[in-house]
Image (cartoon, rainbow, N blue to C red; front, side, top):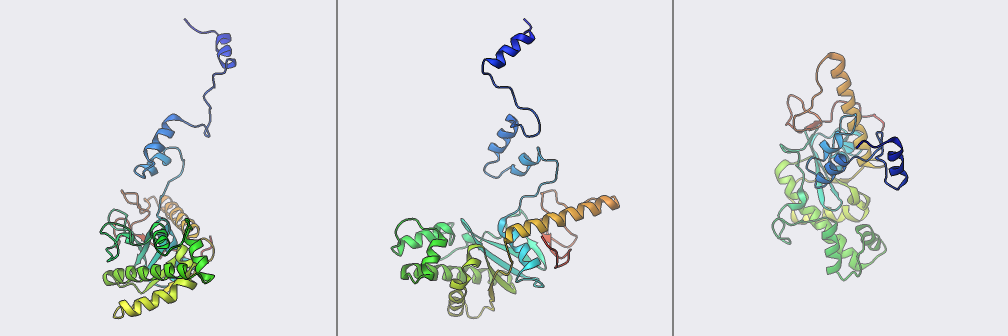
Length: 283
């Protein structure tokens, strides 16, 4: 039996919620898609279905490396590696002026390099590892990496021991990477860059003692402001310019089937050319 308009109105008054309408409405298929993509797989596709613009997902350390070449310590440096720590340790690798992401887009996971003090396949360094070192040093509670480093600045011997152990592991990671790609420069980014006053001298001492034959130069990040945000802003504008140019000449932007941001004739399938815009770009 067909419901009358009055019947439908009565159902609404009885407390049943109407489905929201419009672009801001939550849709079951969108929620299901995002839940399915919570682990990372298919996340870009799940978001892009409901956005009217192209979408690019990028690693935060890679974005910091982009900013470092455009606005920081690596202006004019063709080959460098940015080391940044968050939950884990990551490397933003630039070779020949291009952000190197590897064939599958996952280059730079240096936290899992083999190390004598860790089991194979476990992290050599990261927030969890630093917290573990703090417990081993007798530091009580669950202080963050920043709190541990602040205690070291205040002269806490246990915190200073953690800082030194962290510096030694950074030195060993840098030496391992240098054996393979021989970059001109290493950069401390993220929480490491913010603690360069504690780390740089110690890292250099460990390198001189444990990896003396390798010509490793390491500096702090030179990017003012938020390097990840500045890198993302530059990359988005770079992509927009390329798409606009391609549309103007009737071609297609240099994008890859795998979803990498850019491709050029000489690079790998997921490498990003960082040489296409002026160094003075402002974000």
